[in-house]
Image (cartoon, rainbow, N blue to C red; front, side, top):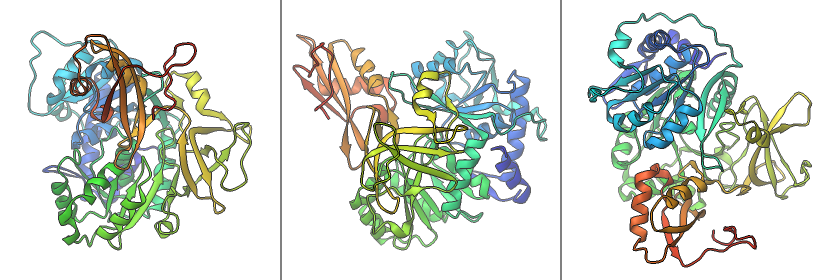
Length: 514
Protein backbone atom coordinates (compact mmCIF):
# COMPACT_ATOMS: atom_id res chain seq x y z
CA UNK A 1 0.00 0.00 0.00
CA UNK A 2 1.14 3.56 -0.74
CA UNK A 3 0.75 6.48 1.65
CA UNK A 4 -1.45 8.52 -0.68
CA UNK A 5 -3.88 5.62 -0.93
CA UNK A 6 -4.93 6.68 2.58
CA UNK A 7 -6.37 9.83 1.03
CA UNK A 8 -7.71 8.19 -2.10
CA UNK A 9 -9.60 5.48 -0.24
CA UNK A 10 -11.14 7.99 2.17
CA UNK A 11 -12.11 10.22 -0.78
CA UNK A 12 -14.02 7.27 -2.24
CA UNK A 13 -15.64 6.30 1.08
CA UNK A 14 -16.31 9.81 2.42
CA UNK A 15 -16.11 12.31 -0.49
CA UNK A 16 -18.21 14.95 1.30
CA UNK A 17 -16.72 14.51 4.78
CA UNK A 18 -14.44 17.20 6.17
CA UNK A 19 -10.80 16.21 6.01
CA UNK A 20 -8.94 19.41 6.91
CA UNK A 21 -10.02 22.52 8.79
CA UNK A 22 -7.41 25.28 8.76
CA UNK A 23 -8.52 28.71 9.91
CA UNK A 24 -11.66 29.53 7.94
CA UNK A 25 -10.84 26.94 5.26
CA UNK A 26 -12.78 23.69 5.44
CA UNK A 27 -12.05 21.05 2.79
CA UNK A 28 -13.57 17.60 2.27
CA UNK A 29 -11.69 14.46 1.36
CA UNK A 30 -13.00 14.78 -2.19
CA UNK A 31 -11.78 18.37 -2.48
CA UNK A 32 -8.33 17.56 -1.02
CA UNK A 33 -7.94 14.58 -3.34
CA UNK A 34 -8.94 16.59 -6.42
CA UNK A 35 -6.58 19.45 -5.52
CA UNK A 36 -3.73 17.00 -4.89
CA UNK A 37 -4.31 15.44 -8.31
CA UNK A 38 -4.15 18.88 -9.93
CA UNK A 39 -0.95 19.68 -8.07
CA UNK A 40 0.62 16.36 -9.09
CA UNK A 41 -0.01 17.17 -12.76
CA UNK A 42 1.39 20.68 -12.28
CA UNK A 43 4.56 19.36 -10.62
CA UNK A 44 5.13 16.85 -13.40
CA UNK A 45 4.60 19.52 -16.04
CA UNK A 46 7.21 21.68 -14.30
CA UNK A 47 9.89 19.01 -14.39
CA UNK A 48 9.32 16.87 -11.28
CA UNK A 49 10.13 13.25 -12.11
CA UNK A 50 9.85 9.88 -10.40
CA UNK A 51 11.78 10.00 -7.11
CA UNK A 52 12.53 13.74 -7.23
CA UNK A 53 12.37 15.74 -4.01
CA UNK A 54 9.74 18.42 -3.43
CA UNK A 55 10.21 20.89 -0.57
CA UNK A 56 7.29 22.40 1.37
CA UNK A 57 8.00 25.63 3.25
CA UNK A 58 4.54 26.54 4.54
CA UNK A 59 2.72 27.16 7.78
CA UNK A 60 0.13 24.63 8.95
CA UNK A 61 -2.32 25.37 6.13
CA UNK A 62 -4.60 23.46 3.78
CA UNK A 63 -2.08 24.16 1.00
CA UNK A 64 0.62 22.40 3.02
CA UNK A 65 -1.56 19.29 3.29
CA UNK A 66 -2.42 19.37 -0.42
CA UNK A 67 1.29 19.76 -1.19
CA UNK A 68 2.17 16.60 0.74
CA UNK A 69 -0.43 14.54 -1.09
CA UNK A 70 0.30 16.18 -4.45
CA UNK A 71 4.02 15.44 -4.25
CA UNK A 72 3.29 11.79 -3.44
CA UNK A 73 0.81 11.51 -6.31
CA UNK A 74 3.52 12.91 -8.62
CA UNK A 75 5.72 9.91 -7.64
CA UNK A 76 7.99 12.32 -5.77
CA UNK A 77 9.44 12.49 -2.26
CA UNK A 78 8.20 15.31 -0.03
CA UNK A 79 9.97 17.08 2.80
CA UNK A 80 8.47 19.76 5.03
CA UNK A 81 10.69 22.57 6.30
CA UNK A 82 9.83 24.24 9.60
CA UNK A 83 8.44 27.69 8.69
CA UNK A 84 10.75 29.37 11.25
CA UNK A 85 13.88 28.00 9.55
CA UNK A 86 16.45 30.59 8.50
CA UNK A 87 17.75 30.99 4.95
CA UNK A 88 21.15 29.32 5.44
CA UNK A 89 19.59 26.13 6.75
CA UNK A 90 16.89 26.11 4.04
CA UNK A 91 19.69 26.45 1.48
CA UNK A 92 21.56 23.52 3.00
CA UNK A 93 18.48 21.28 2.98
CA UNK A 94 17.48 22.13 -0.59
CA UNK A 95 21.00 21.49 -1.87
CA UNK A 96 21.55 18.42 0.27
CA UNK A 97 18.65 16.53 -1.34
CA UNK A 98 18.90 18.39 -4.68
CA UNK A 99 15.28 19.49 -4.57
CA UNK A 100 13.51 19.85 -7.91
CA UNK A 101 10.62 21.98 -6.67
CA UNK A 102 9.75 24.15 -3.69
CA UNK A 103 6.27 25.17 -2.54
CA UNK A 104 6.19 28.23 -0.30
CA UNK A 105 4.09 31.30 0.47
CA UNK A 106 4.39 35.04 -0.03
CA UNK A 107 4.94 35.66 3.68
CA UNK A 108 8.09 33.48 3.56
CA UNK A 109 9.43 35.03 0.38
CA UNK A 110 12.28 37.11 1.75
CA UNK A 111 13.72 34.11 3.55
CA UNK A 112 12.95 31.62 0.79
CA UNK A 113 14.31 33.79 -1.99
CA UNK A 114 17.86 33.71 -0.66
CA UNK A 115 17.77 29.92 -0.52
CA UNK A 116 16.15 29.63 -3.97
CA UNK A 117 18.86 31.76 -5.55
CA UNK A 118 21.51 29.47 -4.08
CA UNK A 119 19.93 26.16 -5.18
CA UNK A 120 20.77 25.14 -8.75
CA UNK A 121 18.67 21.96 -8.79
CA UNK A 122 15.32 23.80 -8.51
CA UNK A 123 13.19 23.73 -11.65
CA UNK A 124 10.10 25.37 -10.21
CA UNK A 125 8.85 27.36 -7.24
CA UNK A 126 5.11 27.43 -6.50
CA UNK A 127 3.89 30.36 -4.46
CA UNK A 128 0.67 30.23 -2.43
CA UNK A 129 -1.21 33.15 -0.94
CA UNK A 130 -2.47 36.46 -2.26
CA UNK A 131 0.64 38.57 -1.70
CA UNK A 132 2.83 38.83 -4.79
CA UNK A 133 6.51 39.44 -4.02
CA UNK A 134 8.72 41.74 -6.03
CA UNK A 135 10.61 39.57 -8.52
CA UNK A 136 11.67 42.34 -10.91
CA UNK A 137 15.34 41.44 -10.55
CA UNK A 138 14.70 37.76 -11.22
CA UNK A 139 14.86 34.60 -9.14
CA UNK A 140 17.02 31.50 -9.17
CA UNK A 141 14.17 29.28 -10.45
CA UNK A 142 10.95 29.86 -12.43
CA UNK A 143 8.17 31.13 -10.18
CA UNK A 144 4.54 30.06 -10.60
CA UNK A 145 1.30 30.97 -8.84
CA UNK A 146 -0.45 28.19 -6.94
CA UNK A 147 -3.97 29.03 -8.07
CA UNK A 148 -3.02 29.52 -11.72
CA UNK A 149 -1.12 26.23 -11.83
CA UNK A 150 -3.84 24.14 -10.22
CA UNK A 151 -6.68 25.65 -12.20
CA UNK A 152 -5.00 24.62 -15.45
CA UNK A 153 -4.76 20.92 -14.53
CA UNK A 154 -7.26 17.99 -14.55
CA UNK A 155 -8.73 16.52 -11.35
CA UNK A 156 -8.05 12.95 -12.42
CA UNK A 157 -5.23 11.04 -10.72
CA UNK A 158 -2.02 10.88 -12.76
CA UNK A 159 -0.55 7.56 -13.85
CA UNK A 160 1.32 5.93 -10.97
CA UNK A 161 4.80 4.41 -10.96
CA UNK A 162 5.66 4.35 -7.26
CA UNK A 163 5.84 1.07 -5.32
CA UNK A 164 5.93 0.68 -1.56
CA UNK A 165 9.73 0.33 -1.21
CA UNK A 166 10.20 3.79 -2.77
CA UNK A 167 10.89 6.81 -0.61
CA UNK A 168 7.83 8.82 0.40
CA UNK A 169 9.39 11.43 2.68
CA UNK A 170 12.57 12.97 3.98
CA UNK A 171 12.36 14.34 7.50
CA UNK A 172 15.32 16.51 8.42
CA UNK A 173 16.52 16.15 11.98
CA UNK A 174 19.50 17.59 13.83
CA UNK A 175 22.82 15.78 13.60
CA UNK A 176 25.93 15.80 15.77
CA UNK A 177 27.94 17.48 12.98
CA UNK A 178 25.79 20.61 13.13
CA UNK A 179 24.07 19.88 9.79
CA UNK A 180 20.59 18.34 9.65
CA UNK A 181 20.28 14.75 8.45
CA UNK A 182 17.56 13.59 6.10
CA UNK A 183 15.74 10.57 7.54
CA UNK A 184 14.60 8.44 4.58
CA UNK A 185 11.13 6.97 5.02
CA UNK A 186 9.59 4.65 2.47
CA UNK A 187 5.90 4.23 1.83
CA UNK A 188 6.11 0.91 3.67
CA UNK A 189 7.75 2.60 6.69
CA UNK A 190 5.00 5.20 6.98
CA UNK A 191 2.10 2.82 6.33
CA UNK A 192 3.45 0.44 8.97
CA UNK A 193 3.92 3.15 11.60
CA UNK A 194 0.56 4.76 10.90
CA UNK A 195 -1.27 1.43 11.05
CA UNK A 196 0.35 0.51 14.38
CA UNK A 197 -0.40 3.87 16.00
CA UNK A 198 -4.01 4.10 14.84
CA UNK A 199 -4.50 0.52 16.07
CA UNK A 200 -3.51 1.21 19.67
CA UNK A 201 -5.25 4.62 19.69
CA UNK A 202 -8.37 2.81 18.41
CA UNK A 203 -9.05 5.57 15.91
CA UNK A 204 -12.34 5.62 14.03
CA UNK A 205 -13.78 7.79 11.26
CA UNK A 206 -15.66 9.91 13.78
CA UNK A 207 -12.42 11.11 15.38
CA UNK A 208 -11.53 14.80 15.10
CA UNK A 209 -7.90 15.62 15.87
CA UNK A 210 -6.76 19.11 16.87
CA UNK A 211 -3.13 19.55 15.78
CA UNK A 212 -1.01 22.54 16.85
CA UNK A 213 2.31 20.85 16.03
CA UNK A 214 4.23 21.85 12.87
CA UNK A 215 4.00 19.47 9.92
CA UNK A 216 7.81 19.49 9.76
CA UNK A 217 7.73 17.60 13.08
CA UNK A 218 6.85 13.94 12.45
CA UNK A 219 4.43 13.98 15.40
CA UNK A 220 2.46 16.76 13.69
CA UNK A 221 2.83 15.32 10.19
CA UNK A 222 1.43 11.94 11.15
CA UNK A 223 -1.76 13.50 12.52
CA UNK A 224 -2.66 14.36 8.91
CA UNK A 225 -1.48 11.05 7.45
CA UNK A 226 -3.20 8.91 10.09
CA UNK A 227 -6.49 10.81 9.92
CA UNK A 228 -6.61 10.19 6.17
CA UNK A 229 -6.06 6.50 6.83
CA UNK A 230 -9.03 6.12 9.18
CA UNK A 231 -11.21 8.82 7.60
CA UNK A 232 -11.04 11.34 10.43
CA UNK A 233 -10.82 15.13 10.47
CA UNK A 234 -7.81 17.27 11.40
CA UNK A 235 -8.17 20.78 12.80
CA UNK A 236 -4.89 22.49 11.87
CA UNK A 237 -3.55 25.31 14.03
CA UNK A 238 -0.25 27.08 13.42
CA UNK A 239 0.97 26.85 17.02
CA UNK A 240 -0.09 26.94 20.66
CA UNK A 241 0.81 30.63 20.94
CA UNK A 242 -2.77 31.55 21.90
CA UNK A 243 -3.75 28.75 24.29
CA UNK A 244 -7.20 30.05 25.24
CA UNK A 245 -8.15 30.31 21.57
CA UNK A 246 -6.92 26.76 20.98
CA UNK A 247 -8.88 25.38 23.93
CA UNK A 248 -11.97 27.22 22.67
CA UNK A 249 -11.46 25.62 19.25
CA UNK A 250 -11.02 22.23 20.91
CA UNK A 251 -14.49 22.60 22.38
CA UNK A 252 -16.25 24.17 19.40
CA UNK A 253 -14.94 21.61 16.91
CA UNK A 254 -15.83 18.72 19.27
CA UNK A 255 -12.29 17.39 19.02
CA UNK A 256 -11.83 13.81 20.20
CA UNK A 257 -8.01 13.72 20.10
CA UNK A 258 -5.37 16.24 21.15
CA UNK A 259 -1.65 15.46 20.66
CA UNK A 260 0.60 17.44 23.01
CA UNK A 261 4.21 17.69 24.21
CA UNK A 262 5.34 18.60 27.76
CA UNK A 263 5.66 22.28 26.82
CA UNK A 264 1.95 22.37 25.96
CA UNK A 265 0.91 20.45 29.05
CA UNK A 266 2.82 22.94 31.23
CA UNK A 267 0.93 25.84 29.64
CA UNK A 268 -2.41 24.07 30.00
CA UNK A 269 -1.79 23.42 33.69
CA UNK A 270 -1.22 27.15 34.25
CA UNK A 271 -4.60 28.05 32.75
CA UNK A 272 -6.55 28.63 35.97
CA UNK A 273 -9.99 28.93 34.37
CA UNK A 274 -9.70 25.55 32.67
CA UNK A 275 -10.86 23.67 35.76
CA UNK A 276 -14.37 25.06 35.15
CA UNK A 277 -14.51 23.78 31.57
CA UNK A 278 -15.90 20.47 30.35
CA UNK A 279 -14.82 18.52 27.28
CA UNK A 280 -17.46 15.85 26.70
CA UNK A 281 -16.21 14.94 23.22
CA UNK A 282 -12.50 14.63 24.03
CA UNK A 283 -11.54 10.94 24.08
CA UNK A 284 -7.74 10.99 24.36
CA UNK A 285 -4.59 13.03 24.86
CA UNK A 286 -1.24 11.79 23.54
CA UNK A 287 2.23 12.86 24.59
CA UNK A 288 5.62 12.08 23.09
CA UNK A 289 9.01 13.81 22.57
CA UNK A 290 9.83 13.73 26.30
CA UNK A 291 8.16 11.87 29.14
CA UNK A 292 5.52 13.84 31.00
CA UNK A 293 6.49 14.69 34.58
CA UNK A 294 4.29 12.84 37.07
CA UNK A 295 2.93 16.19 38.27
CA UNK A 296 1.75 16.93 34.72
CA UNK A 297 0.03 13.55 34.50
CA UNK A 298 -1.84 14.18 37.73
CA UNK A 299 -2.79 17.71 36.68
CA UNK A 300 -4.08 16.62 33.25
CA UNK A 301 -6.16 13.86 34.81
CA UNK A 302 -7.84 16.43 37.05
CA UNK A 303 -8.50 18.87 34.19
CA UNK A 304 -9.71 16.19 31.78
CA UNK A 305 -11.48 13.55 33.89
CA UNK A 306 -12.33 10.42 31.97
CA UNK A 307 -10.02 11.32 29.04
CA UNK A 308 -7.49 8.61 28.12
CA UNK A 309 -3.87 9.76 28.45
CA UNK A 310 -1.29 7.99 26.26
CA UNK A 311 2.34 8.43 27.28
CA UNK A 312 4.56 7.50 24.31
CA UNK A 313 8.15 7.45 23.12
CA UNK A 314 9.55 7.66 19.63
CA UNK A 315 12.22 9.07 17.38
CA UNK A 316 12.13 10.27 13.79
CA UNK A 317 14.14 7.28 12.60
CA UNK A 318 11.20 4.93 13.25
CA UNK A 319 8.40 7.38 14.03
CA UNK A 320 7.09 5.65 17.18
CA UNK A 321 8.54 3.00 19.46
CA UNK A 322 6.27 2.52 22.45
CA UNK A 323 3.07 3.54 24.17
CA UNK A 324 1.75 3.17 27.69
CA UNK A 325 -1.88 1.98 27.77
CA UNK A 326 -3.98 4.53 29.71
CA UNK A 327 -4.99 1.79 32.15
CA UNK A 328 -1.34 1.49 33.23
CA UNK A 329 -0.58 5.16 33.80
CA UNK A 330 -1.42 5.11 37.51
CA UNK A 331 0.72 2.03 38.14
CA UNK A 332 3.68 3.10 35.96
CA UNK A 333 3.51 6.89 35.58
CA UNK A 334 7.23 7.22 34.69
CA UNK A 335 7.13 4.54 31.97
CA UNK A 336 6.77 5.20 28.23
CA UNK A 337 5.21 1.80 27.72
CA UNK A 338 5.98 -1.24 25.61
CA UNK A 339 6.64 -1.68 21.91
CA UNK A 340 3.68 -0.86 19.70
CA UNK A 341 1.90 -3.40 17.45
CA UNK A 342 3.94 -5.03 14.65
CA UNK A 343 7.25 -4.11 16.30
CA UNK A 344 9.75 -5.65 18.70
CA UNK A 345 12.10 -3.86 21.11
CA UNK A 346 14.93 -5.06 23.33
CA UNK A 347 17.95 -3.72 25.23
CA UNK A 348 21.62 -4.50 24.60
CA UNK A 349 24.66 -3.98 26.80
CA UNK A 350 28.01 -2.44 25.80
CA UNK A 351 29.10 -5.78 24.34
CA UNK A 352 25.96 -5.87 22.17
CA UNK A 353 24.48 -8.74 24.16
CA UNK A 354 20.70 -8.81 24.64
CA UNK A 355 19.74 -7.97 28.22
CA UNK A 356 17.25 -10.42 29.70
CA UNK A 357 17.28 -9.27 33.32
CA UNK A 358 14.83 -6.57 34.39
CA UNK A 359 16.12 -3.27 35.74
CA UNK A 360 19.45 -3.41 33.87
CA UNK A 361 20.26 -0.33 31.80
CA UNK A 362 21.01 -0.82 28.11
CA UNK A 363 20.63 0.75 24.68
CA UNK A 364 17.18 0.39 23.14
CA UNK A 365 17.01 -1.50 19.83
CA UNK A 366 13.95 -1.47 17.55
CA UNK A 367 13.03 -3.94 14.83
CA UNK A 368 10.04 -3.49 12.56
CA UNK A 369 8.80 -2.28 9.19
CA UNK A 370 8.60 1.25 10.64
CA UNK A 371 12.41 1.55 10.86
CA UNK A 372 13.85 4.10 8.41
CA UNK A 373 15.77 3.22 5.27
CA UNK A 374 18.71 5.32 6.47
CA UNK A 375 20.05 8.87 6.35
CA UNK A 376 20.12 10.59 2.98
CA UNK A 377 23.61 10.09 1.46
CA UNK A 378 25.21 9.50 4.86
CA UNK A 379 26.36 5.85 4.80
CA UNK A 380 28.61 6.08 7.87
CA UNK A 381 25.93 7.70 10.03
CA UNK A 382 23.40 5.18 8.72
CA UNK A 383 25.69 2.28 9.66
CA UNK A 384 25.94 3.64 13.21
CA UNK A 385 22.17 3.48 13.62
CA UNK A 386 21.16 0.52 11.43
CA UNK A 387 23.07 -2.64 12.34
CA UNK A 388 22.69 -6.38 11.70
CA UNK A 389 20.03 -7.90 13.92
CA UNK A 390 19.51 -11.41 15.23
CA UNK A 391 18.55 -12.64 11.77
CA UNK A 392 20.71 -12.33 8.68
CA UNK A 393 17.95 -10.70 6.62
CA UNK A 394 17.44 -7.67 8.84
CA UNK A 395 18.88 -4.35 9.94
CA UNK A 396 17.64 -3.05 13.29
CA UNK A 397 17.66 0.45 14.73
CA UNK A 398 20.07 1.27 17.55
CA UNK A 399 18.35 4.29 19.04
CA UNK A 400 21.25 5.76 21.02
CA UNK A 401 18.89 6.01 24.02
CA UNK A 402 19.52 4.20 27.28
CA UNK A 403 16.54 2.54 28.99
CA UNK A 404 15.75 0.04 31.66
CA UNK A 405 12.93 -2.48 31.36
CA UNK A 406 10.79 -3.86 34.17
CA UNK A 407 9.73 -7.49 34.60
CA UNK A 408 6.60 -6.88 32.50
CA UNK A 409 8.51 -5.38 29.56
CA UNK A 410 7.69 -1.72 30.22
CA UNK A 411 10.36 0.82 29.27
CA UNK A 412 11.81 3.64 31.39
CA UNK A 413 14.01 6.29 29.75
CA UNK A 414 17.39 6.89 31.44
CA UNK A 415 19.58 9.05 29.17
CA UNK A 416 20.90 9.65 25.66
CA UNK A 417 24.27 8.27 24.58
CA UNK A 418 25.12 11.24 22.34
CA UNK A 419 24.86 14.96 23.08
CA UNK A 420 21.76 15.66 20.97
CA UNK A 421 19.27 17.70 22.99
CA UNK A 422 15.53 17.03 22.88
CA UNK A 423 13.74 20.30 23.60
CA UNK A 424 10.07 21.08 22.96
CA UNK A 425 9.81 17.79 21.12
CA UNK A 426 12.50 18.72 18.58
CA UNK A 427 16.06 17.44 18.27
CA UNK A 428 18.69 20.16 18.66
CA UNK A 429 22.34 19.78 17.71
CA UNK A 430 24.57 21.56 20.28
CA UNK A 431 27.16 22.11 17.56
CA UNK A 432 24.68 24.00 15.39
CA UNK A 433 23.90 26.37 18.27
CA UNK A 434 27.61 26.68 19.10
CA UNK A 435 28.38 27.63 15.49
CA UNK A 436 25.91 30.51 15.74
CA UNK A 437 27.44 31.63 19.05
CA UNK A 438 30.94 31.63 17.56
CA UNK A 439 29.71 33.79 14.67
CA UNK A 440 29.03 36.60 17.15
CA UNK A 441 31.92 39.03 17.48
CA UNK A 442 33.20 38.99 21.04
CA UNK A 443 32.60 35.28 21.75
CA UNK A 444 35.81 33.41 22.55
CA UNK A 445 34.49 30.01 23.60
CA UNK A 446 31.08 28.37 23.75
CA UNK A 447 29.59 25.09 24.92
CA UNK A 448 25.93 24.10 24.67
CA UNK A 449 24.26 21.39 26.74
CA UNK A 450 20.78 20.22 27.65
CA UNK A 451 19.57 20.56 31.21
CA UNK A 452 16.51 18.85 32.66
CA UNK A 453 13.35 20.94 32.44
CA UNK A 454 9.82 19.89 33.40
CA UNK A 455 8.32 22.07 30.69
CA UNK A 456 10.71 21.61 27.76
CA UNK A 457 11.94 18.10 28.48
CA UNK A 458 15.44 19.51 28.15
CA UNK A 459 16.26 23.21 28.16
CA UNK A 460 19.14 24.50 26.05
CA UNK A 461 21.87 26.13 28.11
CA UNK A 462 24.84 27.98 26.61
CA UNK A 463 28.08 28.59 28.48
CA UNK A 464 30.00 31.46 26.90
CA UNK A 465 33.48 32.90 27.46
CA UNK A 466 33.93 36.43 26.08
CA UNK A 467 36.99 37.95 24.47
CA UNK A 468 38.84 40.46 26.57
CA UNK A 469 37.12 43.85 26.46
CA UNK A 470 33.87 42.51 24.97
CA UNK A 471 30.70 44.31 26.06
CA UNK A 472 28.37 41.42 25.19
CA UNK A 473 25.63 40.54 27.66
CA UNK A 474 23.39 37.52 28.04
CA UNK A 475 20.56 39.54 26.51
CA UNK A 476 22.60 40.47 23.42
CA UNK A 477 23.71 36.87 22.97
CA UNK A 478 20.11 35.61 23.13
CA UNK A 479 19.02 38.26 20.61
CA UNK A 480 21.74 37.08 18.21
CA UNK A 481 20.57 33.48 18.61
CA UNK A 482 16.95 34.48 17.96
CA UNK A 483 17.98 36.12 14.69
CA UNK A 484 19.91 33.10 13.47
CA UNK A 485 18.19 30.01 14.86
CA UNK A 486 14.75 28.46 14.75
CA UNK A 487 12.78 29.33 17.87
CA UNK A 488 13.09 25.87 19.45
CA UNK A 489 16.91 26.04 19.12
CA UNK A 490 17.37 29.34 20.95
CA UNK A 491 18.98 28.81 24.40
CA UNK A 492 16.74 29.32 27.38
CA UNK A 493 19.77 30.12 29.55
CA UNK A 494 23.08 31.84 28.80
CA UNK A 495 25.77 31.73 31.47
CA UNK A 496 28.91 33.85 31.08
CA UNK A 497 32.11 32.27 32.39
CA UNK A 498 35.76 33.21 32.57
CA UNK A 499 36.78 29.77 31.28
CA UNK A 500 35.40 26.37 30.29
CA UNK A 501 36.65 22.95 31.43
CA UNK A 502 39.09 21.28 29.03
CA UNK A 503 40.73 17.92 28.50
CA UNK A 504 44.49 17.44 28.71
CA UNK A 505 44.65 18.02 24.95
CA UNK A 506 42.94 21.41 25.31
CA UNK A 507 39.54 20.34 23.96
CA UNK A 508 36.43 21.75 25.67
CA UNK A 509 34.70 19.05 27.70
CA UNK A 510 31.04 19.22 28.67
CA UNK A 511 31.29 16.73 31.52
CA UNK A 512 29.87 18.39 34.58
CA UNK A 513 28.40 21.37 32.71
CA UNK A 514 24.94 19.80 32.43
